[in-house]
Image 1: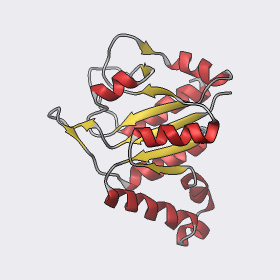
Image 2: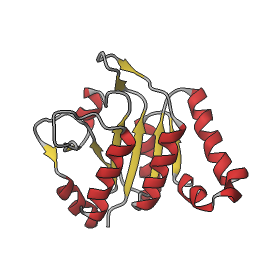
Image 3: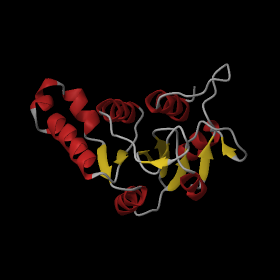
Image 4: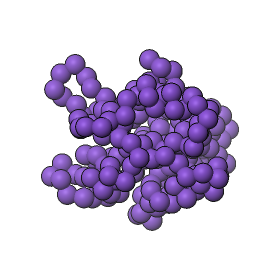
Length: 186
């Protein structure tokens, strides 16, 4: 079975005008994606931000739940937050995974935009079930990953599609749907 990792990129991502920006880290994203990671057997969850102040915020959140008051208050939250790792950039997460596993991960970018050559959830689920290199599922914040990130990915996962034209899920909701499809096969 291939290892699955998750990365939440805060840079480079688009804002609603199409400008490349750095987005803020939110406590809610860190907590919820850590809990999803633990629930769906993700080996590690990377919060990628180049902003040192935000890196310190993530470290403080992790510390609170691993060794601070949160560690005794809620052991299951501590277990989930133990999966959170920090990386200033995507390349740092990739290097960390390679150090840990001995293999470069396959990069699977996500987007809400339709396009050609999208990898289906079922196909990625089959790859994860086989022995192979680790897979890094890359999630974007703001208005999504930049074209450069999508272009360097080995695959782009098909978008989550609702029943109408509106398609702007929170990253937490989209991640929950994706991980359920990839791990539980629904």
